[in-house]
Amino acid sequence: MKARAFSYFRAATIDQALDAHARAGDGACFIAGGQSLVPALSLRLQAPRLLIDITHISELRGVRREGGYLRIGALTRHCEMLSEPLIAEFAPLLHAAAPFVAHPAIRNRGTFGGSVAQADPASEFPAMTLALDAEIEIVGPSGSRRVKADDFFVDLFETALQPGELITAVFVPLFKADQRFAFDELARRRGDYALVGCGMLATCTGERIDDIRISFFSVGNTPTRVKGTEATLIGSSLGTERIAAAQAALEGDLTPPDSDEVPPAMRLHLARVLLGRMLGRLGAGG
Amino acid sequence: MSGFDRSLLDDADETVRVRFTVNGRKVACEVAPRETLVDCLRNALELTGTHAGCEMGACGACLVQLDGQAVHACLMFAVQADGARIDTIEGLTESGVIADLQAEFHRRNALQCGFCTPGMLVNAHELLSQVTRPSRKDIRDALSGNYCRCTGYEAIVDAIDAVAKARSESGGVT
Ligand SMILES: Cc1cc2nc3c(=O)[nH]c(=O)nc-3n(C[C@H](O)[C@H](O)[C@H](O)COP(=O)(O)OP(=O)(O)OC[C@H]3O[C@@H](n4cnc5c(N)ncnc54)[C@H](O)[C@@H]3O)c2cc1C
Ligand code: FES
Ligand code: FES
Image 1 (cartoon, rainbow over the protein chains, first blue to last red):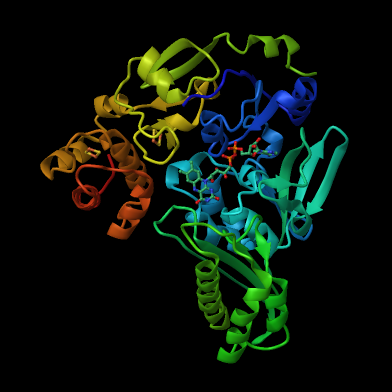
Image 2 (image 1 turned 90 degrees about the vertical axis):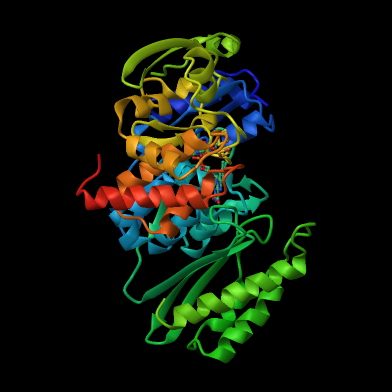
């Protein structure tokens, strides 16, 4: 199918984009990489009257250090998440997740901000912003604000973004020497959305875990932090028993959706297997 | 100042003029904003080497190079490409940059109906310009977004692998 007819406006600045959206009202929609939006338009899941192209707004580009954070511009493409040295050094979890996001040609156009805004519960990057305790910078008609990832993902494809608001950047706390991370997912085929996926970031003193944030994707309506499971791990090192306790605790944190393809019990089982593998690796140095 | 004119909203069915450089030639055409790049290339510019399969980003038949990078022509609108440089399978063929890949695909029967082949070649070309000596796993990984319904992938992987080897032995990329 083809998209319904719409008008197209290429914004050169954030102000132009916000202004166009405000004037067009409900009928407007921003487009970044288009890798989720164009299929949605073709299927007529969405039928905006006006498409506002934000990809030429230079203010939304660039990756740089700012205070204790790495500021990742919304238009940073998935392929740049792989090639940008600052990401590899200061946000290695995102670097590790990037090759699992779709296929190379999709990574050439899809953007980090678009992925976070889309908030697909099966997507890698939204879940990683939770594990990283990142902050989403949002600008709208009434100014700009920063929302913690913990508060950003509200429900299925629903976020703290209000209509007409833009994500300008994501702020990720800089990776530190006493931290370890792990990323992995189980998928039927490389590049497909995962059956279950997970990313984690731990702060350690020697072998002891002082703090850990674990975030799953493809297991619920939103990316999901597993706080009960995290709690079982804090204050001790990662032995076999401790890992088994964490795996057992997952049941209290996750309520996988019912689907014909993957029954909830199987998804929970896969999540346990994945968690066990990843904690094992984390214990061995990450 | 905003460049947005409210009357734009009433123009949804109107066409707009876009200009790009396709296969080294400057072209202009009239497109409706809803027209995808693959439709524009095939219908307006009669470059039918770029194929439209799933039109959802899943099969890879529509891959072209946009400013030197492989992208799905079904996942962008032609208006978005205004000002860009586009290289299709026709251009890549004429320039000779993938002649060795094409010869190797031919030699190894890495195609039957040929529907997926333009996309496979664009993807293989991009892979080999980024990684000089990819492993077979790297090749499979790179092709994960390209469907072939005829040959299976063994011969395609063999062909790309052989070209990678030949190019690195001859000391350079074309
Ligand atoms: C075949 C296929 C496989 C895929 N596989 C995966 C996968 O395995 N994992 C994965 O994570 N993704 C996958 N994707 C989706 C892809 O990664 C998208 O690139 C990404 O999710 C959306 O980013 P985008 O820049 O393309 O956004 P767009 O498609 O342009 O926009 C998506 C939504 O976000 C809004 N938006 C975009 N940017 C902003 C912004 N800065 N501020 C506010 N709103 C904004 C848009 O209005 C729209 O509603 C796949 C896509 C395809 C076609
Ligand atoms: S037609 Fe574009 S990916 Fe299938
Ligand atoms: S050769 Fe027919 S689809 Fe690949």
